[in-house]
Length: 129
Image (cartoon, rainbow, N blue to C red; front, side):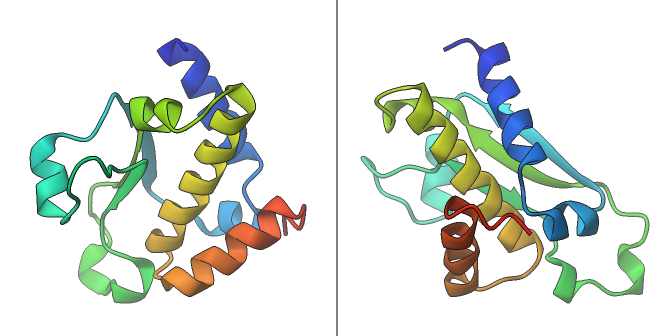
C-alpha cells in the first residue's frame, strides 16, 4: 500500500472517531512513519517479534497545569509497516488504524487501558458518540 493511500485511511479513521473525542482534541498532530526504531521498542520495553502500531507522545490532559499553555503539539505516530504486516487485506488495515487511533487518543485523554478498550468495543459496535 502506498503512503498516500495509508494516510487517506488514517484521515478517514480520524473523521469517524467518536464525536466527543474530536470535540475535545486540541494541539495534537498525527503522523505516519514506516516502523518503530529498535531503540524505541527497547525504550518502551517491547521485544521483537512484538512491535507497536502507534505511539502517543505528550502530556495527557489530566496531568497538565498552567505551564503547558504554549507547548508544542502532542504527537501520535502510526506505524504503517507493522499495521500492514498484521493485516491480511485493506479492511483489516482500516480496522487496525481505527483501533490504534482510538487507543492513542485514549492516552492523550489520560484514560486507563480498561477505559480505552471499552471505548474501542463501543466504537466497533457502531456507537460513535
